Every structure is written in C-alpha cells, then in structure tokens.
Image 1 (cartoon, helix red, strand yellow):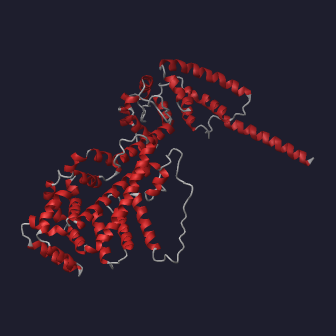
Image 2 (image 1 turned 180 degrees about the vertical axis):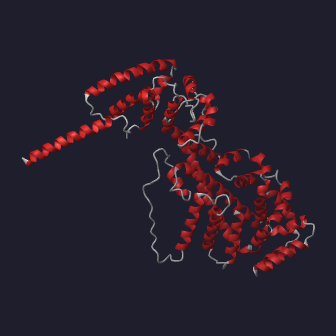
Image 3 (image 1 turned 90 degrees about the horizontal axis):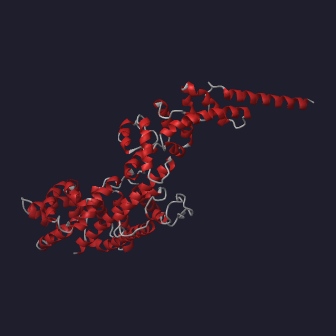
Length: 403
Length: 135
C-alpha cells in the first residue's frame, strides 16, 4: 500500500512536473535554450507569437495535436505572405532552399524579406553563406567589420579568385539580394558553378587551393616536374629528388673527408668573418663581370637568399631575372661568402688585383690573422707563398667560372 | 650564413685530431653539413630545422654511451597523422623530411619546398668547395 501510494505520488508528481515544464516552455518571455537564432525575433513583437510557438513546436516533439493545429495555420499565412515577396525576388526562393536550415527558417518567418534591414542584419550574422554579385563585393569589404569566423576570410579570398566563374542564375539572384543586403557588414562570396556553398566545402576548397599552390611551387623547385601531370607522379618525383639530394650530401661529405687533410681551414674562417663587408664591396665589382656568365649556378643561390617566406616563393622563382638587380644589396654577403669559398686559397691574388695598397697589405693582414689563430696557420701561409704566380691566372678563370 | 657555418665546422674538424678513420670524418662532415643547413638564416624558423637539430643532438648524445645504452627505437607503425585525402606517398615524404611526422599535409609540402632549397644550396656549396680544393 505504501508502495502503491508512493508510486502514485511519484507518477502524479512527474505528471505535474511535465505539465509545469511544458508550461514553462510556453512562456513567451522565458529565453530559450534551443534555437538561439530565433531569439532575435523576440525583438519584433509582431512575430513573437510565431517565434515562441514555432520554437515550442521544434523543441518539444511530444506536443499534443492541438498545438500542431494551432501552428499550421500560423505557418501557412507566413508562407503565403512570404511567397509574394519571394515571387518578386524571382529565383531567390530556390536559392533559399539551398541555404542552411536555420537561415531558411528565419527567412520563412519574415513576411517581407528585405524589408527590415536590421533583422536581415541579424540574420546574416548567423548565416554561414551569402551569395553576392560582383558589384556588391566591392562595397561589402569596405563595409565589413573584422569578420569573426575565419570562414569569411577564406570566402573573401575565394570570392576574389572565383570572380570569373559565377553562373548567370546565381548572378541574378545575387543582384536581387544585394538590394536588400547591401547594408550587411559581411563579406559576400560568389560560388562557383555547380559547387556547394556551405562553410565546410568552402573551407575544404580553400584548403585544396592552398595544397595545390604548394604543389605547384614544389613542381617548380624540382627539376623536370613541370612536365609531369598528376599528383602521385609529381610526389614520386619530389621524393626521388629529396633522396637524391640526401645521397649527394653523403657522397660529397665522403669526398670532402678524403680531401680534408690536405687543406687547412683554420685561417680561412677567421678571414671570412673578419673581412666580410670589405670583401663584399670589392667582389661586387668583380661579380658584375661574371653576372652574365653561368647564370645557372647562381639562380638557386639567389632564390635561396631572396626568399624570406613561402608567400614570396612563387614570385621570386618566377621572376628571378628582374629581381636579380634588386636583390644585389641583399646578396652582397652571400656572394662574398660564396666567392671566398671558391677562392679560399687564391684570395691574396684577388686582393692584389683590386686593392690600391698593393700586394703586401693583404699578406700582412693574413699574417696577423694567422698569428692570432695559431700554429695551424703556418702551412696555409706557406701554401699561399708557394703559388704566387699560378693562382692569378687560375683565379681569373675560376672567377668567371664560378660566379 | 650557411657557408660560413659550414666552413667553420670544417675548420673545426680539420683542426681537431686528424683521425685516419675515413668513416668517422665522413660522419663528422655530414653532421656539419646538416647543422649548417639548419642554422641558415632563412630556415631557422622552420619546423624541419628544429627537428633536424634535435635529431643531430640526439645522435651526438647517443654516441659516447653506445656500448652501454640499449637503443630503443619506438617507431609508430600506424601513421597517426595520415588522413584519407592524402596520397599514399605522403608517408614516405614525412619520413624523408625531418620533423615531418607531426605536420599536416599542407605544411608538409611547404616544409619540403624549403628543405629542398636548403639541401640544394648545401650540395652546391660542397661541390664548389670540392672543385676549389681539387683544382
């Protein structure tokens, strides 16, 4: 008995609870936890009833039939009133169906679509996509505030890139839209023909374009890749090239290890670091002689120094020649260093040719530096002294060869 | 900057106890080459340069205690970072480029481009050095 009473009480209390909760939901002034997009409709007293009822309709599927009956006639006049405005906008209604559902619902509630710019403004704030004409894309970026989601940034980029691909039908719709939406602060994007226009596909498209741009860049870097069509083969070629370069490094390091004991580097690096700028000024004059010669060796070098970030890569690689003159000041140091790399044991001869002071000064300088360095410098100095005559002739040739 | 670093490293190698062991010197030169690549002014901000330096330091630290330490190489068999839209070759590319494991495909391509440029510059540098010495 006691059990029964408790059950009865529980059931009754639960029934009360449900009843109270349903009543709670039906209160118009209570803010809803669902469909936040419809909150803005509360501002419009005219549509308040509609909003609340539809909200309740959406949120509680357990509604009894009388509520549904109440809702249907409400919905019908809205659609009926919406249809004339929809008819006036021509093809926009069909476009509305393609919009995300929340926006479509909002627009269905609105009897006259572009009549209330403030409402449309708020609608757009929650809308993910808005098709626009090219004419509106010019004023819209100026009007737009900093777009909160990153999607709009992508859309803007996408809109700029896909300008020429708009369909006529969409263009018409966009023109109709802009009459009411030109006050919107958001960026309008023109969708390409036959492509989906929701945020996911837009983001994917932007990502795909980024990937394609980088693949193109890699194709230009790797020799022989521009002729190949197809991503898989290009990737294969890139992988082969990377493996080839790594093997090349191993091979050259082996050869350098064999060569190494013969040449002493000790004086060289101090010489390099101490006289970087001064030599740079001198080598520019020499380098200009050899600029036209053997461009191939220099191109990757220039592209290496000239490229500061990936965004510049495309432009620098495509327009290497014109930029050569511009980047000469930047490249001074590298030229100098590379020049000295090739001319390490022939430096004194070059200095003899260029410096006004004469041949003794560089030697004196080197001696000083060698004394600072240590005993390892003596063999290098001896090496320099031994070949005074032969190197000058060789240096000219090597200058032209290696620059 | 790359060339300077490399030459300094080479000088260091030549100065420090000329071992007759060819392989040891080869290894040192290769180490110096990769280190100078990673230290180049253009690539010091890159992911691959940091990963490369980390890998080099790991190898250096492993070397002294080689006989004692047990090399535990935890290689992840299943690729974590692969996504369905990536081509099949992306995994090999990740293995080739240092630090490629943790990157997305998009960044991987960018890093590969930079890595290829640096590698090519290094190869050229070593080639010209060899030519200068041998002639």
